[in-house]
Length: 263
Length: 74
Image (cartoon, rainbow over all chains, first blue to last red; front, side, top):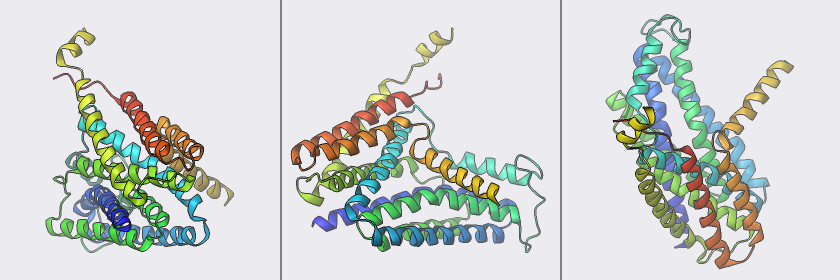
């Protein structure tokens, strides 16, 4: 039971984080594919995914083998806590209307416009023929997947190493990448209907829960109930997130106060 | 060659600075304080289980307040 709860949270956290980041990466890959040709865009995405996979093995495996588990848990816990709190902060600000929601349609349109205009913005070269290799398309897709995937790699390595379940964490991330890839290939467009803020909130809650738990464990705190403290922490963060989001909604300036400020 | 290494190191440092601190230094500070508290309450089951989540939530609240922006007018 103890192991089941922490394993479930690990899989859900890694899968959710990978899903959100890969949906964002897909937007850039589709934009590169539509504007510069699919061949180069797909090669760029695959190359980035391979580099990220190698990073997990090269960094993750030595961590598990050579770093003492308590030290690893404190460092990893701190890393997850920073990441989790910053995801929660952004989710609360977005959920309460203080900052705009992530808009895949807008990002897609902007990227396509930038890629279709030769020499515009990024100094892009003319589009290559349908069967030619297009360097710009490759680089845009590679950068999209690599930059969005870096956070996933850190989460996979952190959660996987702290629980000595690197393989399972990598598998959960791989499943999310595959799912986004298959859905993206079928619909051949960005996935703007995915409730990104909701998933990001859920992942932020899980990362913050794991982060606190591992920091405590590594430092010698005996959590009541052992691993069962993780679902309790998850429940705590759910309540905190709902309460903070509700409070922040009340602090939104109304149209009337806006006008009096600008007058 | 040295310039390329220096550039790569700068980029690496910049990535970690952005990742850990960025525009929310209060969350990095919060994490440092929570790690220190965890060592201080070492072995105290109830104190640790209550104190650490409350401190983390308190810093999150401060960070959210700091991050709020004026909403669009209508």
